[in-house]
Length: 575
Image (cartoon, rainbow, N blue to C red; front, side, top):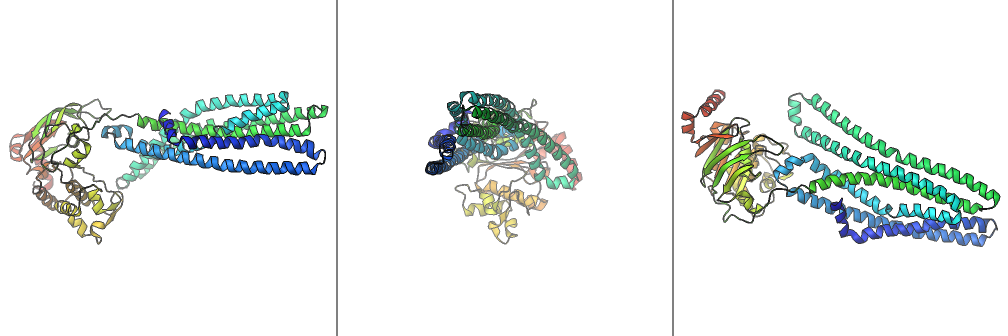
């Protein structure tokens, strides 16, 4: 909770004023029963209408001042809670943006999204209620007990016993509720993750007639969440009924003993009414306190989850080096590099070494699962090697400033992500230095100009998040244009032409070989026809480099490559 509590510093004044205004409101409420007792004993009993009128005016004044205090308290509590949650969400998002890809893999997108939205909202509700009831409820409970002692110490003990019993109930509830609510948030992560996967892959699910299976899995996870929420709700559900039971029993006993004392003359009717009002105040405030505890318990559980993300300290440390000219071609060296993903006991890549001269075009090929994409992501700086060293222009990727590295090195993945906005925005992504001419040039070289020409709005054609209405090949071409727009000196195309027809792919590859800045180019593919014209081809098998030579050399000397070539010729007719 220390991380969340530290945000109160920026809203210290509001966090103090809100409870204080609630405290002033509570002071007036504690005086009201005494005024009513005086009206009964001194006004109604004696028939003094002037006294009654003056006391009623006093009650109206108390109500007005209390109302103004309550409004101010609510305002300061609401603005403080909204401000703290806003700052918390901003810093959490900033922290997440700085995490490495490995950290993203470890946390999971559903956990991150739930923390940024639902968890922070729950923390805001908890802070709001906490500031308003922090002093008010305990003050009124304690104040009502003390005021009861000024009237009748013996009858006031009834309230003391009730408060002690309720304190035990509340303590037990808090001890059980916080872990239970934490489990419900974990269940919500699981359900949100499944829902996201299902919506993203709805076409695949329907295409393979797996709708019923997906629904059954969702239903199972939903039922699991329901079970966790029910268990947490059961713990909280006992709080209000027990509060009502204890207080109402105490009130009944108070009325009984008060009637006895009135009959023997040790108490007046007004004093009994005052004692009853104080007991009622205790009842109302303890119910509020119970709701506060339930809400705060949820907020504490959410805060611990949020702090869990803050506690993730990325192992990535940005350097201070910069590329003298990011657009120039760059040299790449792998020195005995091995790599394994987080939480994996086995290496995906094993002892890989090679040197690529600046300006070369290198093909990377291999069977499914051979480590091609992983190698591309290592080149692009997504991950750091588990063993060995990667050098780009003689320095490690992590030695460079992130902004300089992103200008010099770019990767295009197989599944190009489309964002809500125009085609022009999806190519530039709002990056500084990319002008209209750069967008048009990248569009032309990536064959995206065909896509743009087919839209009446041209580059201003609006895409939805996910690129509905575009084919897989059109998305890939826009993704390649995005990669080319910044004119990086090192480009990695990770199976980025898999959805293109042979004619468009050939035209695209020809364009890439004629780029103005002649970058170093890595083309990852499962198709030999895509990489056959590269300077050299890196052949991977089970995470190891088995050959590094030209297409002609591999087709004559390497058995694995010959097998791939034979299979693809059978499938396509020729390569």
